[in-house]
Length: 212
Image (spheres, helix red, strand yellow):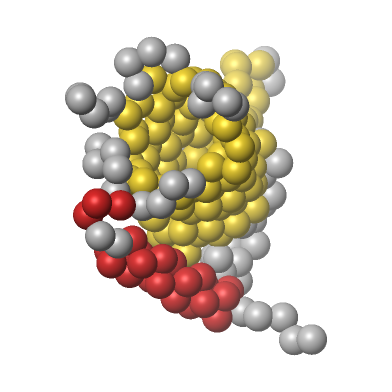
């Protein structure tokens, strides 16, 4: 079977995401309870990064999601992933003595998109929640050398993975998340671009509790 191109696959994912967005918009207001969005902040690290440098680094995201069914929510997300940094050892050109190590090539990915989450399980007292999320968005990947960008490309990005959260008091929840990300990017001009990586993150979530 002939493999689908990144553009074709991205177009199909976009069509599915648009259909979900229209479904959310068509829901009656009474179904959107509680009406307050849930804020989700994830801070962690990238791992398993392909391409080069590919060593991974800090990762973070900020999302706002609204419930549109008993077990589903939908909203927007901002994200940024450090994909890795290469280091070089400097030496004195005359004496060849080591002068230290400095960063050279660095690569990062950032963008925005839509997020859908499904609650697959919750404890009887609704303290523990096991969620599965999927993101669809648009991202820019940049390579820089000591802060000066010399290569950049933009494209569709998708992500998916589980989240485990524990609800505490005041609408706060804490937990962890694991996500896999794939960027539909052309590697013709730069074979070292990263297209696949994972994210391990600590999660804080908050949702305002409606007053009786």
